[in-house]
Length: 325
Image (cartoon, rainbow, N blue to C red):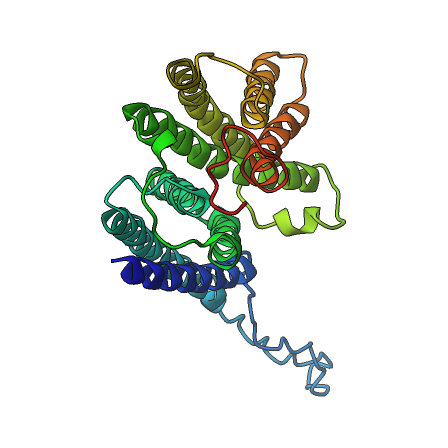
């Protein structure tokens, strides 16, 4: 089962990569304009002087109807293929998570590799739900699949560890409660940062900025829709993240005799909570501009990355269960 899980991860990465390429094709062709190709119009030509002394005008050729917009049709086809490939990749991805858990005979969240594997699946599953409800946001899939490819490739190359039993400190029912909610909230935050970054680029484009990276946003959905998706995902994930932090404190009280000790992971979890709370407060405050609030959401995700990668690689504490130290 462990070998099967590894193979499914590889196939999932390839499927995400092909889906990303298909999205890129849709992105490149999606805004092709219809070009009306008319037959040449001949000017009036004096054919000579008739008996009345006037000129004889040659008739004007009729204008041909516009050709069908083949580029738009190809873009739509590429987009549909990308969506189906993303669904296939998510199915392979889920198979990798499930078979990893079967091989380990536990929930597959015991180390950093398994954590990233599960968080990314939550993110793409949430994206498929969004895509089903709002197909107009499909071009955002280019950036989502890019994130999937990068994170899964990094996990395979740098974080991979063999299946091992769960260490004694994690053998508790609180492991399922705390880690599952952290994973779920992190996956939704992962999805939420994609429209956040896209909104910042698209808003700049709509304001007339034509430099990089704003030029990447000219074929993205409207800024208002991206901003609403950013807010919706964060408003949904934040209460779950709050519960996860509280559950972790209760578990720490039961395991270590204290609910909070400013361990590096606890500290960065608190920092992330404060930043995301700040985003939601800023988003609800009319005097705060939407792009300022969105930048706070992006900073929040950077603190989550710090908690996931930075703390596990560079700090040692009671939460050093990453399997890469």
